[in-house]
Length: 406
Image (tube, rainbow, N blue to C red; front, top):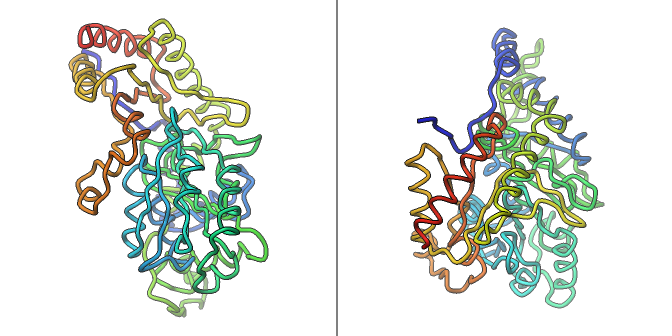
């Protein structure tokens, strides 16, 4: 039996050579390759400043801490997202305020965000799902309109300077996506990308903060502040300290430890070099093939990958099985596994998870999220998946649907 995994990383001789070069260089932690990777991402996205760290989670949490989010504050998050989006809010002692999806879509509703904003709202975290961007302009307009009506209780310099909730886009899935002709990640105050092993562009583990704060903020000085926070509050990184006679440093805060290494950045640089003209093209072709094949079945609801304002990064193919129950969806996944195909589900809405149920959230309050989740199956999409493998995935799922939903 041929096994078709869900989303293995692309590791080839170029990747191996790049990592080998770092290992032989004598410098493997944060250094020149990490800084080059940051500059290249900034150029690719058109953002003001980029800081690469060891995960999206730590990148986003550092930003919220810098903005002063803490005990008693509210942060609006979608009910339909991975747990990391809300977990970091809990880490800060703030309360995640969950809102529903746009009907028929996986991304958050701007109207639902508007209804949830209060004076205590300190941040809003829209989430791009499967590479499909949120309607950023609608969200930013909602924030401005709501603050005029309801006010904003600022605490600390960053909050007073911005005068409204921070909009931190969870763009973990959408590196390479486009919104109104621009790269995803530059439409909001801050965004965060993930470079985890299953992402389109991987560094094994890793993430990036994309800074685009408006005037009068100085994004360069914010980058410096976040970089210090990511290194235990230390005023010099290891590369700077390694310069002749430059060992002395200071600790100016009780910071954290979440820097990216040059080993990780070397992988990312290889991936970035071939991203638009190779990786995205292949992922687009796979998703297009899936859409073409599934168009022959009236039970198949394929995802949208482009419209008048948005283009996906083709991170996930979020197939929905019309009228399927959760049990039937799960049975289809098992049937595919028996044929060697690994499928997934993105995501269980947060109110369905034990921790958040224990906090009092109820999935009944988020009907659109439940409707999107209950019959969703994520299909394999990765660079080395062949056209024949994609056809086999479709044939296997269609056979299972015919048997299970008869």
